[in-house]
Image 1 (cartoon, rainbow, N blue to C red):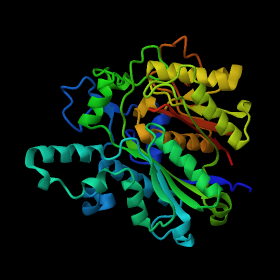
Image 2 (image 1 turned 60 degrees about the horizontal axis):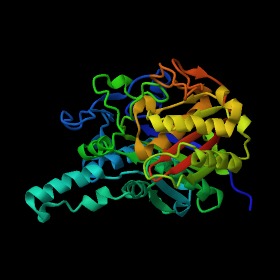
Image 3 (image 1 turned 180 degrees about the horizontal axis):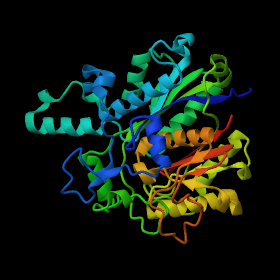
Image 4 (image 1 turned 60 degrees about the vertical axis):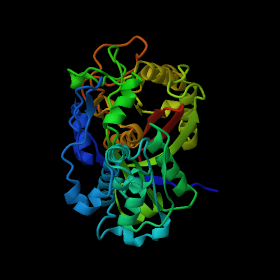
Length: 416
């Protein structure tokens, strides 16, 4: 069977750098900082007191007061990003969505944590007031598929609808699954990506207890420093990235702009350790090689890598090794950047935001820098685009996502 071609026709972003696609991308190109002292709660007693927070998102105006109250923040971010993505693809209010059979429109998103704030708040209610005070909205707000359900309700989508949870690779797996859904004829359009809002007391405390987070509390703007010798842990972020994937011929007939073609998807597992990466990099290398093979693209054709780039000692060293394994000597010639250097680690939403950024870079021929890459690490010796954004024509770019559980994912985008 000939696989159908899949393209990106809409992008919506909610991140610590802005509540829209253009705000976020332009801030990334400028090397701006989205990390600050936590304001969502009092962090004074926490080992880590910094994060990338979503700011000034007026969910009441966007979603309505009643609907906003019925969503955990991760769901609010996801629906907000979906609204922008749908409008970008001319599928919003009064748009072309009516030309689709609703049974042929899917919604597949990822989240690593889900509605953790709602769980925390209702647990306090249970402890302080008793079971009768627990909100009847607890389950609808905390469940992983809350965001896909809310998007389906908003737009009347009746195709495949589910959420994927695979830690920090969740939304990348969702995008890969969405691509397959179109390729194999189960849908013509998929709303996909991911959302996360784990900058909560329990979320921060849990990762801090693992010694995974940076404690550069007095200098938030310099705390996330992927591939830099002085890195000392990742910085939590929150937000959402939603992309509209569409069958190529249908997109052409509608005459909408196309950001990039989704060409390849590779996935693997380390089967090594629940939270630490296998330093040989064999699992991630396998995922990258699978994505290239899936897209029929040779390693020497890759022009850009949007790295997982977490700013942890183990990940950055391992990912550098992976790129050398896959690309050989050519690895040193391929520009690599980490979006997390400016927005932090959005956990289950990180892959979707980073793949969206990759598609924007492919479309516009410009790459954002890696912020805070100041002190070269001998074990991380590739071209991480320090300093300023770089103009470069990109035919093919990849986006890497690796997560707890040893899960690995790579997505391949191509210019069209």
